[in-house]
Amino acid sequence: MSTLDLIDVTKTYSIVTAIEPLSLKIGDGELVCLLGPSGSGKSTLLRIIGGFETPTAGKVLIDGVDVAFDPPEKRPTAMVFQSHALWQHMSVFENIAFGLKLRGFSKADIRRKVEAGLSLVGLQDYANRRPSQLSGGQRQRVAIARCVVLEPKILLMDEPFASLDQHLRDRLREEVRQIQKTLGITTVFVTHGQDEALSVADRIVVMSMGRIEQVGTPGEIYATPATPFVAGFIGDMNMVPVTVSNGFVDIGGISLPAPLPEGPATLAVRPEDIVLGKADTAAAANIIRIVNYGSFIKVTASLNGLQWKVQAPKTASIAEGATLSLSVVRYQIFRDDRVVFRSDDA
Ligand SMILES: Nc1ncnc2c1ncn2[C@@H]1O[C@H](COP(=O)(O)OP(=O)(O)OP(=O)(O)O)[C@@H](O)[C@H]1O
Image (cartoon, rainbow, N blue to C red; front, side):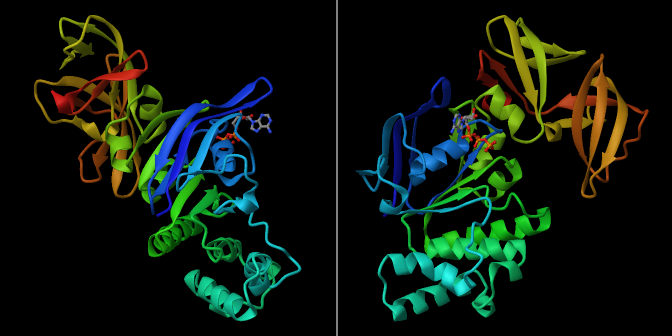
Protein backbone atom coordinates (compact mmCIF):
# COMPACT_ATOMS: atom_id res chain seq x y z
CA MET A 1 0.00 0.00 0.00
CA SER A 2 1.37 3.43 -0.94
CA THR A 3 -1.03 6.26 -0.45
CA LEU A 4 -0.39 9.97 -0.49
CA ASP A 5 -2.45 12.32 1.60
CA LEU A 6 -1.93 16.08 1.36
CA ILE A 7 -3.64 17.94 4.16
CA ASP A 8 -4.06 21.74 4.07
CA VAL A 9 -0.77 22.16 2.19
CA THR A 10 0.16 25.81 1.61
CA LYS A 11 3.20 27.48 0.06
CA THR A 12 4.03 31.16 0.04
CA TYR A 13 7.19 32.82 -1.24
CA SER A 14 7.34 36.19 0.56
CA ILE A 15 4.36 37.93 -1.07
CA VAL A 16 3.57 35.23 -3.68
CA THR A 17 1.11 32.51 -2.73
CA ALA A 18 2.10 29.58 -4.93
CA ILE A 19 -0.27 27.10 -3.24
CA GLU A 20 -3.47 28.07 -1.44
CA PRO A 21 -4.39 25.64 1.37
CA LEU A 22 -5.31 22.42 -0.41
CA SER A 23 -5.99 18.81 0.42
CA LEU A 24 -5.78 15.79 -1.86
CA LYS A 25 -5.82 12.02 -1.40
CA ILE A 26 -4.09 9.75 -3.89
CA GLY A 27 -4.79 6.04 -3.68
CA ASP A 28 -2.47 3.06 -3.93
CA GLY A 29 -1.30 2.45 -7.51
CA GLU A 30 -3.07 5.49 -8.91
CA LEU A 31 -1.62 7.66 -11.66
CA VAL A 32 -2.72 11.22 -10.98
CA CYS A 33 -1.94 14.16 -13.27
CA LEU A 34 -1.58 17.68 -11.93
CA LEU A 35 -2.81 19.76 -14.86
CA GLY A 36 -2.94 23.53 -15.16
CA PRO A 37 -1.56 26.54 -16.97
CA SER A 38 1.87 28.01 -16.30
CA GLY A 39 2.12 29.40 -12.78
CA SER A 40 -0.83 27.41 -11.40
CA GLY A 41 1.37 25.74 -8.78
CA LYS A 42 1.73 22.22 -10.21
CA SER A 43 5.52 22.03 -9.97
CA THR A 44 5.55 23.61 -6.53
CA LEU A 45 3.10 20.99 -5.29
CA LEU A 46 5.12 18.16 -6.85
CA ARG A 47 8.33 19.54 -5.34
CA ILE A 48 6.65 19.69 -1.93
CA ILE A 49 5.70 16.01 -2.29
CA GLY A 50 9.26 15.13 -3.33
CA GLY A 51 10.93 17.19 -0.61
CA PHE A 52 12.55 19.77 -2.90
CA GLU A 53 10.41 22.44 -1.23
CA THR A 54 8.96 22.57 2.26
CA PRO A 55 5.35 23.64 2.67
CA THR A 56 4.63 26.84 4.57
CA ALA A 57 1.94 24.82 6.37
CA GLY A 58 0.24 21.46 6.07
CA LYS A 59 1.03 17.76 6.08
CA VAL A 60 2.39 15.41 3.44
CA LEU A 61 1.46 11.91 4.54
CA ILE A 62 2.91 8.89 2.76
CA ASP A 63 1.27 5.75 4.08
CA GLY A 64 0.16 7.84 7.04
CA VAL A 65 3.63 9.16 7.92
CA ASP A 66 4.18 12.93 7.70
CA VAL A 67 7.28 13.56 5.57
CA ALA A 68 6.63 17.30 5.00
CA PHE A 69 10.00 18.34 6.40
CA ASP A 70 12.13 15.35 5.41
CA PRO A 71 14.76 15.92 2.69
CA PRO A 72 14.22 14.13 -0.66
CA GLU A 73 16.68 11.32 0.09
CA LYS A 74 14.86 10.46 3.31
CA ARG A 75 11.52 10.08 1.53
CA PRO A 76 10.14 6.99 -0.22
CA THR A 77 9.77 9.06 -3.39
CA ALA A 78 11.72 9.41 -6.65
CA MET A 79 11.41 12.18 -9.20
CA VAL A 80 11.85 12.16 -12.98
CA PHE A 81 12.69 15.72 -14.03
CA GLN A 82 11.90 17.53 -17.24
CA SER A 83 15.53 17.52 -18.33
CA HIS A 84 16.92 14.06 -17.76
CA ALA A 85 19.81 15.24 -15.56
CA LEU A 86 21.88 12.12 -16.24
CA TRP A 87 25.54 12.03 -15.30
CA GLN A 88 27.37 12.44 -18.58
CA HIS A 89 30.60 10.83 -17.41
CA MET A 90 28.83 7.63 -16.40
CA SER A 91 27.47 4.82 -18.56
CA VAL A 92 23.76 4.07 -18.65
CA PHE A 93 24.39 1.16 -16.29
CA GLU A 94 26.29 3.35 -13.83
CA ASN A 95 23.64 6.04 -13.97
CA ILE A 96 20.94 3.58 -13.00
CA ALA A 97 23.17 1.86 -10.41
CA PHE A 98 24.17 5.10 -8.67
CA GLY A 99 21.21 5.43 -6.29
CA LEU A 100 21.32 1.73 -5.48
CA LYS A 101 25.01 2.00 -4.51
CA LEU A 102 24.20 4.90 -2.19
CA ARG A 103 21.62 2.71 -0.54
CA GLY A 104 24.20 0.01 0.12
CA PHE A 105 22.94 -2.79 -2.11
CA SER A 106 25.40 -5.59 -2.91
CA LYS A 107 27.05 -5.72 -6.33
CA ALA A 108 24.96 -8.74 -7.33
CA ASP A 109 21.73 -7.07 -6.28
CA ILE A 110 22.68 -3.89 -8.11
CA ARG A 111 23.37 -5.84 -11.31
CA ARG A 112 20.07 -7.70 -11.05
CA LYS A 113 18.06 -4.54 -10.34
CA VAL A 114 19.74 -2.47 -13.05
CA GLU A 115 19.20 -5.23 -15.61
CA ALA A 116 15.54 -5.47 -14.62
CA GLY A 117 15.25 -1.68 -14.91
CA LEU A 118 16.90 -1.64 -18.33
CA SER A 119 14.62 -4.35 -19.59
CA LEU A 120 11.56 -2.53 -18.21
CA VAL A 121 12.35 0.48 -20.37
CA GLY A 122 13.59 -1.60 -23.34
CA LEU A 123 17.24 -0.55 -23.11
CA GLN A 124 18.92 -3.91 -22.40
CA ASP A 125 21.40 -3.34 -25.20
CA TYR A 126 22.41 0.16 -24.13
CA ALA A 127 23.95 -0.49 -20.71
CA ASN A 128 27.46 0.57 -21.75
CA ARG A 129 26.55 3.71 -23.67
CA ARG A 130 27.10 7.22 -22.39
CA PRO A 131 24.07 9.56 -22.19
CA SER A 132 25.54 11.59 -25.08
CA GLN A 133 25.22 8.50 -27.29
CA LEU A 134 21.47 8.21 -26.70
CA SER A 135 18.44 9.89 -28.25
CA GLY A 136 16.30 12.23 -26.12
CA GLY A 137 13.67 9.53 -25.66
CA GLN A 138 16.27 6.94 -24.63
CA ARG A 139 17.77 9.35 -22.10
CA GLN A 140 14.37 9.91 -20.57
CA ARG A 141 13.87 6.13 -20.39
CA VAL A 142 17.16 5.90 -18.46
CA ALA A 143 15.92 8.62 -16.11
CA ILE A 144 12.74 6.61 -15.52
CA ALA A 145 14.69 3.37 -14.95
CA ARG A 146 16.99 5.18 -12.52
CA CYS A 147 13.94 6.11 -10.45
CA VAL A 148 11.99 2.86 -10.58
CA VAL A 149 14.93 0.63 -9.55
CA LEU A 150 14.85 2.44 -6.22
CA GLU A 151 11.35 1.00 -5.77
CA PRO A 152 9.92 4.25 -4.43
CA LYS A 153 6.47 4.24 -2.88
CA ILE A 154 5.60 7.33 -4.91
CA LEU A 155 6.97 8.12 -8.38
CA LEU A 156 6.95 11.82 -9.28
CA MET A 157 7.27 13.09 -12.84
CA ASP A 158 7.63 16.78 -13.70
CA GLU A 159 6.71 17.30 -17.36
CA PRO A 160 8.98 14.36 -18.21
CA PHE A 161 8.41 14.52 -21.97
CA ALA A 162 8.22 18.28 -22.50
CA SER A 163 11.45 18.41 -24.49
CA LEU A 164 10.48 15.58 -26.86
CA ASP A 165 8.60 15.76 -30.15
CA GLN A 166 4.90 14.96 -30.22
CA HIS A 167 5.23 11.47 -31.71
CA LEU A 168 7.84 10.35 -29.19
CA ARG A 169 5.92 11.95 -26.37
CA ASP A 170 2.80 9.94 -27.27
CA ARG A 171 4.83 6.73 -27.36
CA LEU A 172 6.69 7.35 -24.12
CA ARG A 173 3.61 8.24 -22.18
CA GLU A 174 2.02 4.96 -23.25
CA GLU A 175 5.19 3.19 -22.09
CA VAL A 176 5.13 5.02 -18.77
CA ARG A 177 1.52 4.10 -18.32
CA GLN A 178 2.34 0.44 -18.89
CA ILE A 179 5.37 0.48 -16.61
CA GLN A 180 3.33 2.24 -13.94
CA LYS A 181 0.54 -0.33 -14.16
CA THR A 182 2.98 -3.26 -14.29
CA LEU A 183 4.71 -2.07 -11.13
CA GLY A 184 1.50 -0.78 -9.54
CA ILE A 185 3.42 2.29 -8.43
CA THR A 186 1.54 5.33 -7.12
CA THR A 187 2.47 8.15 -9.49
CA VAL A 188 2.01 11.91 -9.63
CA PHE A 189 2.65 13.39 -13.05
CA VAL A 190 2.78 17.13 -13.80
CA THR A 191 1.78 18.39 -17.20
CA HIS A 192 0.28 21.44 -18.81
CA GLY A 193 -0.87 19.35 -21.76
CA GLN A 194 -4.51 18.44 -21.49
CA ASP A 195 -4.20 15.63 -24.07
CA GLU A 196 -1.39 14.14 -22.03
CA ALA A 197 -3.47 14.26 -18.85
CA LEU A 198 -6.65 12.98 -20.50
CA SER A 199 -4.86 10.03 -22.10
CA VAL A 200 -2.62 8.90 -19.26
CA ALA A 201 -4.28 9.67 -15.92
CA ASP A 202 -6.55 7.65 -13.69
CA ARG A 203 -7.56 10.98 -12.18
CA ILE A 204 -6.77 14.56 -13.10
CA VAL A 205 -6.28 17.39 -10.62
CA VAL A 206 -6.97 20.64 -12.47
CA MET A 207 -5.13 23.56 -10.88
CA SER A 208 -5.41 27.31 -11.37
CA MET A 209 -3.73 30.07 -9.40
CA GLY A 210 -2.53 27.74 -6.65
CA ARG A 211 -5.95 26.18 -6.12
CA ILE A 212 -7.54 22.88 -7.05
CA GLU A 213 -10.41 23.60 -9.43
CA GLN A 214 -11.58 20.02 -9.84
CA VAL A 215 -10.48 16.44 -9.24
CA GLY A 216 -11.93 13.66 -11.37
CA THR A 217 -11.40 10.96 -13.95
CA PRO A 218 -10.60 12.20 -17.46
CA GLY A 219 -14.19 11.35 -18.46
CA GLU A 220 -15.67 13.32 -15.56
CA ILE A 221 -13.44 16.32 -16.09
CA TYR A 222 -14.31 16.46 -19.78
CA ALA A 223 -18.04 15.73 -19.55
CA THR A 224 -18.88 17.55 -16.34
CA PRO A 225 -16.45 20.43 -15.73
CA ALA A 226 -17.25 21.94 -12.34
CA THR A 227 -16.11 25.50 -13.03
CA PRO A 228 -15.88 27.81 -16.05
CA PHE A 229 -12.10 27.59 -15.76
CA VAL A 230 -12.13 23.80 -16.18
CA ALA A 231 -14.72 24.05 -18.96
CA GLY A 232 -12.54 26.47 -20.88
CA PHE A 233 -9.22 24.79 -20.14
CA ILE A 234 -10.03 21.16 -21.00
CA GLY A 235 -10.97 20.57 -24.62
CA ASP A 236 -12.76 23.02 -26.85
CA MET A 237 -15.80 24.77 -25.44
CA ASN A 238 -18.17 27.47 -26.62
CA MET A 239 -18.60 29.81 -23.64
CA VAL A 240 -21.33 32.36 -24.23
CA PRO A 241 -22.73 35.04 -21.91
CA VAL A 242 -26.52 34.59 -21.66
CA THR A 243 -29.46 35.86 -19.63
CA VAL A 244 -31.85 33.48 -17.93
CA SER A 245 -35.42 34.65 -18.43
CA ASN A 246 -38.63 32.72 -17.66
CA GLY A 247 -36.71 29.47 -17.27
CA PHE A 248 -34.94 29.71 -20.64
CA VAL A 249 -31.84 31.17 -22.23
CA ASP A 250 -32.06 32.43 -25.79
CA ILE A 251 -29.19 32.22 -28.26
CA GLY A 252 -30.15 33.89 -31.50
CA GLY A 253 -33.61 32.37 -31.77
CA ILE A 254 -32.81 29.08 -30.02
CA SER A 255 -34.42 28.71 -26.60
CA LEU A 256 -32.76 26.30 -24.19
CA PRO A 257 -34.41 25.26 -20.92
CA ALA A 258 -32.69 26.81 -17.89
CA PRO A 259 -34.75 26.26 -14.74
CA LEU A 260 -32.82 28.90 -12.76
CA PRO A 261 -33.38 32.27 -11.13
CA GLU A 262 -33.42 35.14 -13.64
CA GLY A 263 -30.18 36.92 -14.47
CA PRO A 264 -26.86 36.66 -16.26
CA ALA A 265 -25.06 33.34 -16.65
CA THR A 266 -22.58 31.58 -18.93
CA LEU A 267 -23.68 28.88 -21.34
CA ALA A 268 -21.07 26.21 -22.14
CA VAL A 269 -21.43 23.90 -25.15
CA ARG A 270 -18.89 21.43 -26.53
CA PRO A 271 -18.34 21.69 -30.31
CA GLU A 272 -19.43 18.06 -30.72
CA ASP A 273 -22.71 18.82 -28.89
CA ILE A 274 -23.89 21.11 -31.68
CA VAL A 275 -25.57 19.60 -34.71
CA LEU A 276 -25.80 21.42 -38.01
CA GLY A 277 -28.61 20.89 -40.47
CA LYS A 278 -30.59 18.59 -38.22
CA ALA A 279 -33.85 20.10 -36.96
CA ASP A 280 -36.06 22.21 -39.23
CA THR A 281 -37.18 24.25 -36.26
CA ALA A 282 -33.68 25.24 -35.20
CA ALA A 283 -32.24 28.64 -36.04
CA ALA A 284 -30.31 29.27 -39.25
CA ALA A 285 -26.54 29.73 -39.00
CA ASN A 286 -24.06 30.86 -41.62
CA ILE A 287 -21.08 28.58 -42.17
CA ILE A 288 -18.03 30.82 -42.08
CA ARG A 289 -15.12 28.41 -42.07
CA ILE A 290 -14.39 24.71 -42.27
CA VAL A 291 -11.09 23.13 -41.20
CA ASN A 292 -10.42 19.50 -42.06
CA TYR A 293 -8.81 17.39 -39.33
CA GLY A 294 -8.84 14.15 -41.29
CA SER A 295 -11.23 12.10 -39.18
CA PHE A 296 -13.58 15.06 -38.50
CA ILE A 297 -14.11 18.68 -39.47
CA LYS A 298 -14.21 21.83 -37.35
CA VAL A 299 -16.76 24.36 -38.45
CA THR A 300 -17.20 27.99 -37.45
CA ALA A 301 -20.87 28.93 -37.67
CA SER A 302 -22.37 32.37 -37.07
CA LEU A 303 -25.80 32.71 -35.49
CA ASN A 304 -27.16 36.21 -34.93
CA GLY A 305 -23.68 37.67 -34.75
CA LEU A 306 -22.33 35.02 -32.32
CA GLN A 307 -19.72 32.59 -33.54
CA TRP A 308 -19.95 28.90 -32.60
CA LYS A 309 -17.31 26.21 -32.88
CA VAL A 310 -18.89 23.02 -34.16
CA GLN A 311 -17.31 19.60 -34.65
CA ALA A 312 -18.88 17.44 -37.33
CA PRO A 313 -18.13 14.08 -38.93
CA LYS A 314 -15.94 14.25 -42.02
CA THR A 315 -18.86 12.81 -43.98
CA ALA A 316 -21.11 15.81 -43.16
CA SER A 317 -22.02 17.71 -46.31
CA ILE A 318 -21.25 21.20 -45.11
CA ALA A 319 -19.81 23.95 -47.27
CA GLU A 320 -18.45 27.39 -46.43
CA GLY A 321 -21.09 30.03 -47.16
CA ALA A 322 -24.03 27.66 -46.61
CA THR A 323 -26.93 28.39 -44.26
CA LEU A 324 -27.81 25.50 -41.97
CA SER A 325 -29.97 24.88 -38.96
CA LEU A 326 -28.02 24.80 -35.69
CA SER A 327 -29.18 22.86 -32.66
CA VAL A 328 -27.63 22.38 -29.27
CA VAL A 329 -28.00 18.82 -27.99
CA ARG A 330 -26.13 19.10 -24.66
CA TYR A 331 -25.07 22.08 -22.57
CA GLN A 332 -24.40 23.37 -19.13
CA ILE A 333 -24.77 26.70 -17.43
CA PHE A 334 -22.37 28.39 -15.02
CA ARG A 335 -23.08 31.16 -12.58
CA ASP A 336 -20.80 32.63 -9.91
CA ASP A 337 -17.93 30.38 -11.02
CA ARG A 338 -19.78 27.11 -10.59
CA VAL A 339 -22.08 24.89 -12.58
CA VAL A 340 -25.78 25.49 -11.85
CA PHE A 341 -27.47 23.45 -14.59
CA ARG A 342 -26.63 20.51 -16.85
CA SER A 343 -29.02 19.51 -19.62
CA ASP A 344 -28.10 15.85 -19.02
CA ASP A 345 -29.45 16.07 -15.46
CA ALA A 346 -32.77 17.60 -16.52
N1 LIG B 1 11.26 30.03 -5.74
C1 LIG B 1 10.20 30.82 -5.98
N2 LIG B 1 10.17 32.09 -5.51
C2 LIG B 1 9.11 32.89 -5.72
N3 LIG B 1 8.01 32.50 -6.40
C3 LIG B 1 7.99 31.27 -6.90
C4 LIG B 1 9.06 30.36 -6.73
N4 LIG B 1 8.75 29.18 -7.34
C5 LIG B 1 7.52 29.36 -7.87
N5 LIG B 1 7.06 30.59 -7.62
C6 LIG B 1 5.77 31.16 -8.02
O1 LIG B 1 4.77 30.27 -7.59
C7 LIG B 1 3.74 30.16 -8.57
C8 LIG B 1 3.56 28.71 -8.99
O2 LIG B 1 4.72 28.30 -9.69
P1 LIG B 1 4.90 26.81 -10.25
O3 LIG B 1 6.25 26.70 -10.84
O4 LIG B 1 4.52 25.83 -9.21
O5 LIG B 1 3.78 26.77 -11.39
P2 LIG B 1 3.57 25.69 -12.52
O6 LIG B 1 2.10 25.47 -12.58
O7 LIG B 1 4.40 24.48 -12.27
O8 LIG B 1 4.06 26.46 -13.81
P3 LIG B 1 4.93 25.94 -15.06
O9 LIG B 1 4.00 25.08 -15.87
O10 LIG B 1 5.28 27.22 -15.77
O11 LIG B 1 6.11 25.21 -14.52
C9 LIG B 1 4.13 31.10 -9.70
O12 LIG B 1 3.47 32.31 -9.52
C10 LIG B 1 5.62 31.23 -9.53
O13 LIG B 1 6.07 32.46 -10.04
